[in-house]
Length: 586
Ligand code: PEP
Ligand code: MG
Image 1: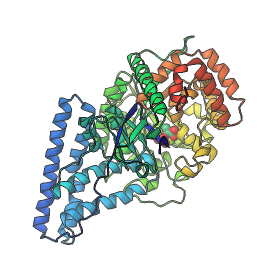
Image 2 (image 1 turned 60 degrees about the horizontal axis):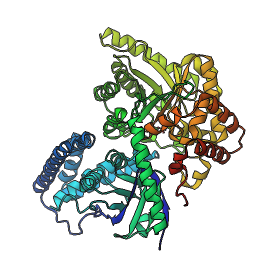
Image 3 (image 1 turned 90 degrees about the horizontal axis):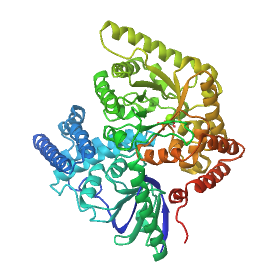
Image 4 (image 1 turned 90 degrees about the vertical axis):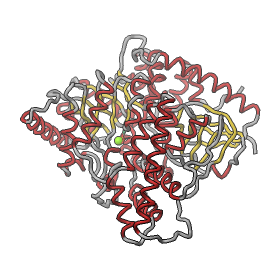
């Protein structure tokens, strides 16, 4: 059938057209005839497979460095560290020593128990971290069976399609020069998706059912800008996408060349554009895409990539590295945003985790964890470019308690003669409607606000942000969410406090004029979107943005707001058709 269209989440903003290669990695199942061998022999087999894996990764790292690819090389470090992690080693070896499990079984059961832990986590970002572990486990199993570490993964120009990818498979694909990838699973923040973006491979993820509809050799278009996939396009469609590809390549090149120009409107209103990051591999993206520092450093990965809560030193090393990478620009470090059910070792079951022990509610109740994290952040603030952001705030009392803790820690650090920033700013995330509604009072106790529209939309509309059944009700441009954003800015500015946005709406091109119209002080977004968003801001005036905001506020639904803004933006920026119009007709 010609022109079969699928939609997924755009994950790496470019277009590729090529022959499909459907990749089905061997399932991670036990060979049916696992012979039980003696414990010493199984331990030796495990050790051999592990050493082989370390050697393979070392070689891969050398190759990547030769190809001047420091981003991916750093990812290999993470995998090598995992292979040497005492918790991982002890856990597998303990299983073998029981005499009941072979090396292969021990690795698989370790991986399965971890998978269970990760699958219970409602936050898709965190659940996706499991893919990194799976990557290493697959490598170990292949080594045990003495198979080639990676099977064929497509060749030059191919579009590789699979249920999911591992980070090392993406590295291998990059070496082979594949043009694009499509995954049935995963989100924009999956490691493999971040890597695809870093390595300039077009990518669409979360494309449910696609592997059943495509065969190796079919021609496929993958549009990593809109998330559209076309299988066996007709000539007309192919021509349109080829044109879109050429146009977007030229435009993106221009945006990148201008990435360091400030985000200042025609009439002189300036807004800081900073980056949302979490992983060490994303650090080079701050400068690469022209961000003014980091507007949101999520810290959950530190806690979920180790079996134990990371200590102050481990956290400090990472925070310092981020602060140094961004210097002299600032880094807004968000304290842990996990729920009780999401921290290893404290397996609290809750009926409504999103309404439960999450974010600051959890950290305030787990003082040691919170104190270590705040100490690490304060110590990393010595050069003065660190700010602290508190997630899931719903009441004034929470901020007061955090501030008391920070003051106590400062006193201790002073006594220990450890440097920190005495004037470090402390801000609240605006994710729960009680904060905008009470922003007059909050403005008296915080230094700044950062609006998290992903959760603000979820908690305003009572629509679970990850539930596909009701995803049509989830729109960050819902009039109620716009009203709450505006209310926050108005009340905060009245008390001379600044406001940023770190939710996904900051990367939504049609939303930009209304965010500027509100006089937002900062927008923080995924790095690769930054050059384009800056370009759009430079083409608008504050005056027209205020006018567009006023008109948008008269609309009665998210779709009316969107339709209106889309029309206005297409008039002003015709090249946006490549993003806002899926496939243009001739
Ligand atoms: C948000 O809620 O908009 C936000 C940025 O935080 P997270 O997506 O990490 O919950
Ligand atoms: Mg949030």
